[in-house]
Amino acid sequence: MRFIGIRFRDRDLITAEQIKAQFYSYDTSVRLANRIVLLREWLLEQLTSLERKEREAPWVQEELHYLDKEQYAEVFDALHKEREVFDFAERYAEVFEILHKKRRRDEGDFDFADREEELLRRMIVKKRFNPLRQQVKRLKFVDVRGLYVQLFGDVDVYREMTHAADVPEHWPAICAQTKEKLNRGELFYEDATPYLYLQELIEGARTNMEVRHLFVDEGQDYSMFQYAYLKKLFPRARMTVLGDFGQAIFPQATNLHEADSPLFRLYGEAETSLFRLVRSYRSTREIVAFTRMLVPGGEEIVPFERSGRKPLLVQASSSEERTVRMAEHLAALLAEGFGSIAVITKTAAESRDAYALLTALGSLELRLITKKTPDFEKGAMVIPVYLAKGVEFDAVLIYDASAQTYYRENERKLFYTACTRAMHRLLLYSVGEWTPYLQALDEALYEVDQ
Image (tube, rainbow, N blue to C red):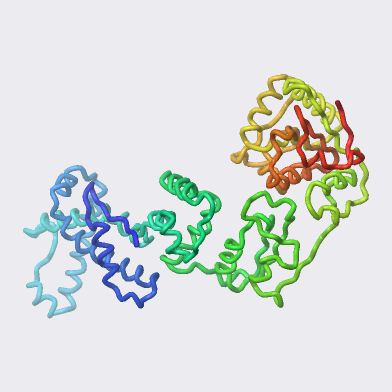
């Protein structure tokens, strides 16, 4: 276990080593989360004791000189309330009078100033210690990040944890990148759920017994670990997962469309049903006929009977010519009355470049969509494909469909996702050789503009 010491005014009140020693003094048969609760209570008791001692510290005397009138008034009122309590006791409790020798506690008492200072000291220290108490109550003394970092040690650590003979490819590089990210206070997307799972093991389960049904959209982008975690968080809920495995752009994608999908193991085959929806309603028949041939099994997709133009492949001799032709097509599409037009790029960096080149012509009104853009508006925009997932546009222009940009087989679904954003028009541009995904298509499925 890893812990974070409790510091106050640049010094350790309770060190990480002391916390660790107390933790390991508990019976190991007690559940981990329960031992953390015991540790929290011990820490709160220690803070209470340390708070009393801190009232005599020199810095408290210094702060007494800087208190405002409101703080003095608060203490003065408290002392008067104390006096009223004693007055009540003097009148109605003879024993209380004897114990306290009938002494009235007011501003005339010889110890009034001492008691005022004592209350002020308590108030000052309590105010400074409250944030420490809140941190302890929220279990901030547990170094969850340090615990997670420990999982990414060397190869021997991996084998010890997993009892596996084989180590994943690039494991040292994965460890280095993950630790570097964590040291910056950041997490890779893939690490978010395992991190939460580890935190839950330590701090106790967080379950919701009221939610009875979960709907998971873009389900192909969730890993089985994430599905298992969702089930753990909502143990009384059924689950409906919707997705298109053809648009699985992340490496941890889950197969949804086949009978051997790992999702069948989540609730069991008897409790799981698979519905395959094969008709596409978004795009025209020509666009569906074109895009369905880009992915394996796509021939099963049935297009909706709405006709339009075939996709247009635009071959340019230079990036400058591509920019000019794209600007002409954008202007023509806007003139035709299309309300939403997207120039889709592969990456965010490519989006910035495309936006700069197109707006430099001065004749277009474009918006650059980034992960910080709050919403989508009508008009023409430049957007990376991973932000365009789940969104549809009247017309789509694929900024670079060349073999230089799309050549890996594991990027095929990314390309497919970009093309299937188009409802009525699809235009693809290339400087140089076309991506292999297009070279394998029947030429009757598209038009070419040299």
